[in-house]
Image (cartoon, rainbow over all chains, first blue to last red; front, side, top):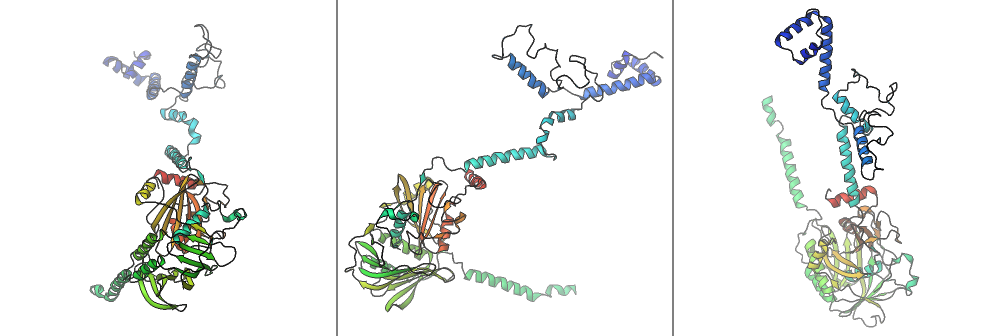
Length: 221
Length: 349
């Protein structure tokens, strides 16, 4: 095992699956073999990154397309298809870009035709959880202020809007309030007879000749 | 040197304490004008009660003149009092028609007004003075701070109230009336034809008033510190109930007419910010309507909270303004006013 590279045992070494003797000899080999040491280092990094990705969450685009697919297949969603017929879209399942790939139709620029193998995951394509979460919120990011408490600001704005809207509705006039015209002349007489500070009543002999400003109603009593 | 410092300023400290004591004493010795009841012997009340009694028993004829806040007098009116029939007013100029008011409810109302006057002011007998050659009792109604709020002149021989005047706190006379050419009896002066009227007959009992309040009607027992509810009546106009609440301080009367509903936006009067005749918040109460009232009367009309309010007052402008302000304010049709109104209704304000 001296000049022979570790090969598949390298993966077992990193996963801690070697026995004590094999583990000791592998470490001795790594101390001497720069090539295996480099490969072990890369493999550790890769496994660490893969481990850090955690459980993938369904993409919103994927969910949307899945829902659309289910609607198309549902009752009234179209003419019944035979099992051999391709789903709507003109291609069979798998013939178009995989659901959830979130890539534009036709693939990325420079990418091969649909159905070509997905490129190997490189360091650039590995997305950290934080960045992934940020990407999911990107479509709403233009609505958010750039302040650190943007979400709270949006929540406050929504509460204020609801409050103002509710107050505006509550502040409206009662819908069943009748339109009334106060009979000022009657009121004047009523006030006069109770206060007994009786005014000079310039009631015209002909009510039709009353000035327009004398009130909406002439005395009716 | 430091040992001398505590006793270095004994005089200013004593002066400050003395000044504070004086301030407290003078503050308690001079109550505000709006404190009730005003302290006094109220020895003028028997004179006024005798006068109210005379109004229901003595027939007389006189010429009445009224003066408003501007000091401008109105056209003289012949006043004929005939107990049992009422009071007739005969305009002495051209164009006016005689008007007769039935006097059946006045006795009770008089007693309420006098009780209110006694409760709010210190009513003192200021002695006998000569008025137009007739000896008269002068009765002064004073505020709690000693300023005169009103004066009454009662004829010594007949007990008839021959004059009255209302003063603002500065001492300026703002409203008054006076009877001249007083003659006993009504011979030849009682009009044969006249418009006859009497107060609305549906007097609202305290229980009915409480029920109206529970239904949302604005009918407070007190509008301001000196204006209290002395009478409430109701009637029906075009199928809608109208409530007439009379507020008084014993000298001036403010009538508040309430109707459930709203004003038509195309009202013949200028409809500005939901009010007619007054500004938002009761400011700018406008004088009387020339074609209906004579001098000295104020008028305001607005809508608020599903009710239309009309205020008529034979009272000083500041008293009328405070009465208007005490009622729900005129509604503004603006966005923020509506939001504020809604906040208030929802209990946030």
